[in-house]
Image 1: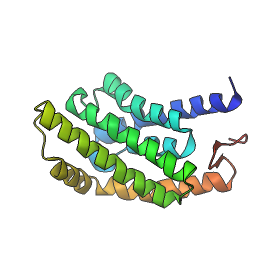
Image 2: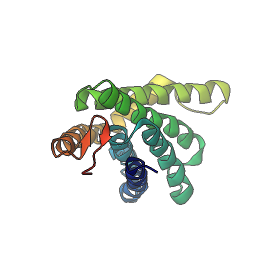
Image 3: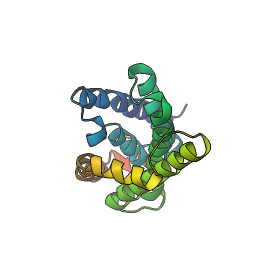
Image 4: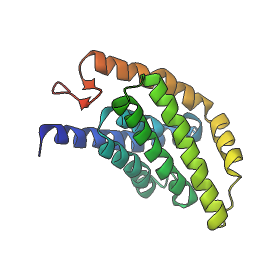
Length: 180
């Protein structure tokens, strides 16, 4: 196994662990859906590890969290969160690492894409499986307005952190460096 693959496995595991532990802290104070603590590690994975590892971390995080802590609830929340977080990780990775876009633009693009995917899954669940959920547009608007503090935190923390890591040669557009 190449050294880079080992680093990506370790970093992905770290992001998954953060994605399980941070929500426990925030949910203890009833602030999980407001501050979106699971989103931050998944978005970071999208910027830092390769696309397959970013998607794997994004999918594994809510699944393991649900199995270990009961958060998010398995049905229907886990279903749409898996797809939403996978979109966050994948789109952040593609925009930042492949298209070489600015970290802020990549973050905003991934946030928009994730919410669109979430809305699509909500629509599928409501339309084909008769799950009682609000209309997708209302669902997305509600989730955005409730989570404005979390969105602001993501915008304040993630791009500067990515820039600091890049400036210190810990990551490149191609991913982790030999110094990381």
